[in-house]
Length: 268
Picture 1 (cartoon, rainbow, N blue to C red):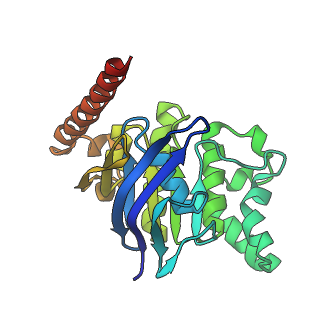
Picture 2: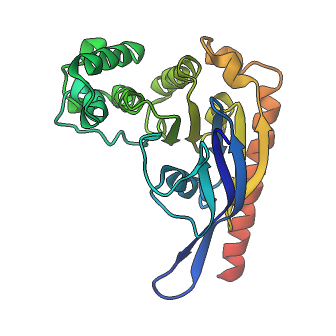
């Protein structure tokens, strides 16, 4: 089976003093090649745990992840990760950061230079290729992180709140860039976010997860990501389905948070 399959995935963390936390419970879904999915939910619903299992950083307690017909047992170049903070080599130049993966794989220098120059052009950093990462703004650093991920040519890009630390204007520009890269590269992208608006704009599929244990509460299939490619995202938000869907999801998450707080107060 092509694409990414998550099959009956559960994750339990055992606590040092005894007891355990069920972070995920029986999560199953299938992503086709080239799909863009955002994942949303209250704190403690297992979003990041799910992403870390998909990346191969964690082994699930039960179930499995299957990528293009083979089981995921650890990190691999077919799955690229973009973190909230770029996790870049700050002492290196932009160009050296983006070329790191291809260089480790032994790509010929001329081919590597062509790939790097193309990606820097795509993310708008060609004029900054010789700058050290620490000299760049947060938004520019995330552009470097995206280019570095793409340089390894992964089938799936995993994004853990990659735009969460950016100011509003830079975040909107980066959202447009993510949509542009999705359409131009045909990559499968899974994006974790705490922002309902971002999840709506960057998810042709949107998962709302419920906590304790973490599980899929509801899935949406939305038109906004396709509409946002090459468009003004503020205009996309005027779509007649946008505001009602946003309010529905906000209420859903608010009710989950209220339920969690009720449990905490009841146990106090």
